[in-house]
Length: 569
Image (cartoon, rainbow, N blue to C red; front, side, top):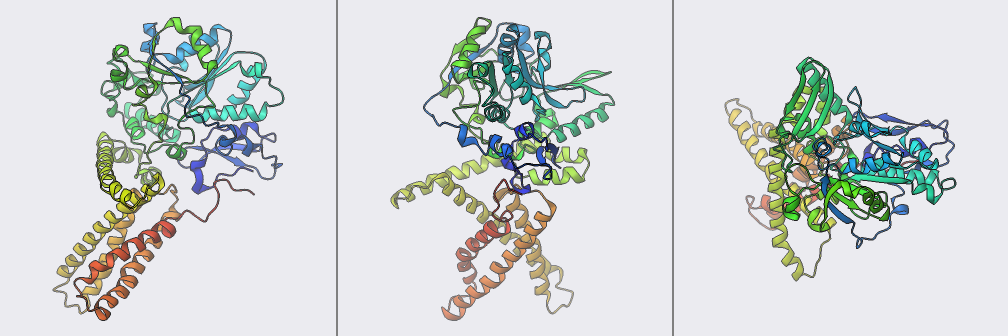
C-alpha cells in the first residue's frame, strides 16, 4: 500500500495515477496544509493489490526508463503562421499546431484550463473553437481528476488523443496505461495517443494562487474572471521586462501588471518560494523522455542560437523525441514557420530541461507565516520584486564563492590523486556554509557578551559574566539555528513540532561543543601543553566546528528515523 510520509513528500508528484487505478476506489486525493494534493488510503477497504505502487511513476521509474543519453531529439524552432494564434499563445503557438491536427482528425485534446473559480484543472476539448480554453501557460499545479481513465477509454475506442501536461503528469499517464491497459489495449490503439509535455520550472501551490485571487478581488472589489500569466502585447523576451500578467475583472475590465515583476504571485513563483516539494528534486529531468513524444517550450536563447527566428513576437522550441512525435509534426508543418536547429545550443537557456529548481531557503518560513499571518503581510515579505532580487543576488554571490573554492581546491585534490564526485563537493560546500555561520555566531556571541557586561557594570552583580555568557549563548545559538535552517541544511519538513525539536537539539549540540568539548580541549592546551589561554580558543576551532557540524547534520537536522519514502501498513 502506498503511503506518503510527512517527511518524504518530495517523493510524490501529485499525478494521481494511484487513485485512478485503485480497483476499490479507496484512494482519495487530499490537499495538505501547503495546498498540494497527496493520496490518502482507506486501509479498511484496501485489498493490498499494490497496484498503487506499481503505477507510481517515481517508484517504478526504473521499470520504464531506458538510458540512452546519446540519442538527442530532433529540435525545431519557429512559430505558427497564423498571427492571431501566435499572439494569443505564450510563445510561438506550437501547442495549437499539434492540437489542431488532432481535432481535424476527429480526435480529442486534453490540457489545463482555469475554470470560472480560477481553479486549474485538466479538461478535454473536441473542437478548435474551444482550444482557447487550453492556450497559454498556467503557473499552478492542475487537478488531473480522472483524465487518465478518459484517455484510456478514448484510445481504446480508436480516437486520436493528444494529452498535454507537465512531465510528471505525462509520466503518470504513461505508467497508468502500461499497468492498467496491458491486457486490453493493443499497440495499434496505443498509437492513437500523442503525449506532449513542456520544459517545466516547477508547479506552485494552488492554495497560494487561490489566496492571491482572493487578494485581487478584495483589492479591486470585483470578481476575477480570467488570468493570463503571460501577456505579450508589449513583446516577448526571456528577461520578462516586456511581459506581464493580465487580470480580467467582471465589471471593471482588465488590469495589466507589467513588467512581470509587478505581479506578486509571479515573483514568488520565479523565486521558488512555494513550489511542490517534489519539484526541488524532480525525477523527470533530462533525456530521453520515455513518457513523451513531444516537448514544447519558449525558445529562450534564440537570439544567439538562431537569430533569424527572433522577432520578439514569440518563438517556440519543439523537441521531437520519436517517430510518433515527428509524424504529428509532419501533418501540420506547412502551417508552421520553422527551422531545424542545434539541440545543445538551443536548450542552453532552458536549464529546467535538466535541472530542478533550487529550494528557496525561506520556503519553510513562508508557509509557516502563510498559515498564521494575513496574505498581505506574507505577500510583502516573500513575494515582492525586492525579495526576488535580493535572493537572486545572494545566489549569485554564493555561486561566485563556490567557483572560487573549486578553483583553489581542484589542483590540490589533483596533487593528492583525489577526484571528488558531486555528492562529495556538495557535502564539503555545505560544511563551508556551516563554518561561515559559525564565524558569524562567534561574532554575535562576543558582541552580545560585551554588550551585556557593559549594561550590567553598574548593577553591582558578582556573577554578571554568567548572565552575559548565558544571554550570549542563548541568542547566538538562536542566530545559528535560523541561518543553518535557511541556508545550510534547509530541511524539507515544515512541521511546528519538528522545528521545535530541531531547535532543542541545536542547543544541546552547541552546549556539547561550546562548553564540554571546548573546556576539555582548553584544559589539555593550557594545563598539559602549557599553551597560552588566549591561543587555546583558536586551537579548539578545528575540533569544535566539525564536531558541531556532524552533530547538526546527523542528529539535530536528521529526518525522523530511517524510514523509506513510502511506508507500508
